[in-house]
Image 1 (spheres, one colour):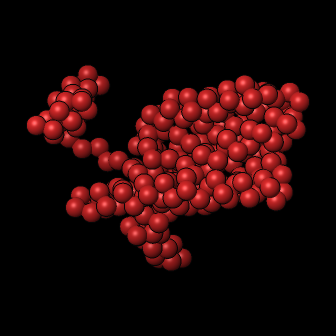
Image 2: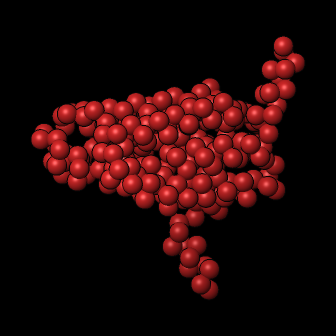
Length: 232
């Protein structure tokens, strides 16, 4: 039995499968996020307590929560592993979409589409997914792998708008949210394939030392200076 489980885990951790899983997670998480604007008109028309300003505030809060929670999601992935963080993030994403599907007040929309989906995005997008994918590839192949995984997110943006619009037109906005939530369950199902965490290397380093090291790195040179050097 243990031998069978070990064989399954080895197959699931195959770099190619991890790359596919990471690309799909990015496709779903990032793609769906770019289709939420399509819900503005039907939601504000059907729900009396929600106007355009409230809907816009929920989306703005979503972006804010995404940015604020992203560093913590990365730290948790380093400590507990990417799979757990992506699974929990996917669960938050699904819960937020389900809350949005049954919304009847401004508070419900802000909590579901703003807070819960925002936190879910922080754990299911590039900050965590690319780390999980990159660890499975050697340095000489890592850039290509990360590029392919990032392409998954871009493809999701391309596909999400027509698919979501078709759902809203064919059923209604509430069932469209439910449908997107069911699609987001895929993130939780793929999370075990994106396991692993960053291994500590070298000596302990303080935050100040890490910041000074980063500032001395050429990757942190201001963009305008880099552009000026390139034009010379």
